[in-house]
Image (cartoon, rainbow, N blue to C red; front, side, top):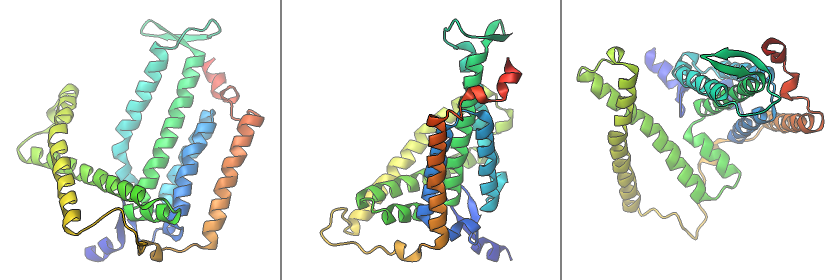
Length: 287
């Protein structure tokens, strides 16, 4: 039973997704377009409420794709750190402007409305962009990404370098996990360590991880040399991967919808200033 369940799962760059995930009905190019569009949309929206809706829609995409949300908890500390850093930066380094409106103080530091509003806008964008990136790399394998690039006629050498980079990133995470397990096997207890000690420990990971990365790059280079592989070739390469994917009507409809959505948001942003932060409901709470 467990073996059958494993066979029905697909390992992506950041997660494990069922083979029959509804998302895999779409071509890799459509998934790449979804990643690009969702990466641009928050940049044009200065309303934290709309970015929050965008974040909720991304979470719904996780559920639709049947990604295990419990695996996403490892990104929560990153999101919290990003929020703390963003708000502290705008609180302690607000800049100088005579039009700033004072709304309170923190640790003897005056808090102004305009910088805090910018902090909310920036943080909502950061989380939206972060979640869209996590979603894409949690639902796509290296093979899917390469298939989308080759379909778009990206030069082979670029797709080859990107493929090795993605594969190296996955191996880097596996090496990190191996190093940590080796430390735990030797009796290291992370729960008893202070925050500063953990930071020092993570900085020490650089040495073994860099050594493993250099060793693996040398092994890959030797393996390619032994097989007589050459990036430059005068003959056209057969692309076996592309034979495994095909376009459908749903791909065309989804692509058109995404492009139109981006165009509409850009028009409303620059022509009507509809997504300006001064339209946010937060101004009634902060002022």
